Amino acid sequence: MTRCFQAALLAAFLLPVYPALAQSQFPPLPPPPRPADMQRFASETCGSQTARIVIEINNLDTRMNLTAQQKTLFERWKAVKLNAAKSIDCTPPPMGPDMLVDAVKYEEKMLRQRHEEVKAELPSLQALVVSLNPRQKAILASYRLTPHRIPHGDETRNASAPPFPPLP
Image 1 (cartoon, rainbow, N blue to C red):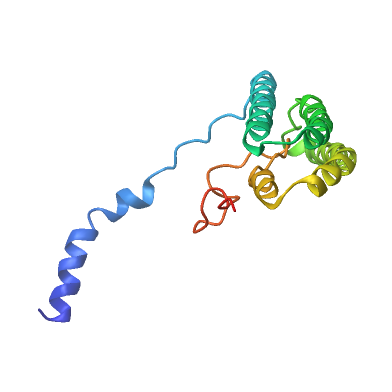
Image 2: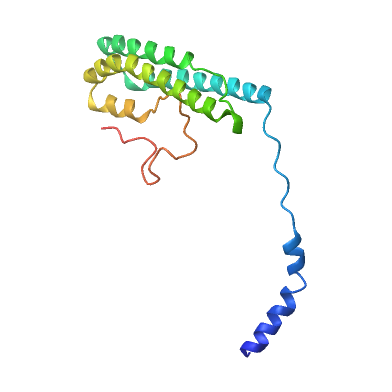
């Protein structure tokens, strides 16, 4: 086929469709969520997140096969971790263009709270880690127990890495 024929053929098929494509409208955006819906979602998320952390810590306790001395250190760390999980602020962040400054203040408040939780956790975690053997450290490292972050899918892991590090 010659180029002129190809261009004519293409124009014959596209010209009748082009006006319809040019005039199509995108569907309207959904309305923003209501504050009551946001509060309900935040409460549900907080509750399930706290329950997930309790389950993961209990599974961790079972998998690590701790000695009596390690068990005491683990219980100390567990108490701090569970206290942090239960103290999560479940209020939803302010939303909307008029709430920009309030949203940044909310973020600052959440970061300060997380900072305080990490400061409280660090001494008990350091004592626990010093007492663990390499196998137990690998098990502890495989759990990402961060109360303010719920990983979605595999975004926190390297895609080529196994789900948990191999045990020695």
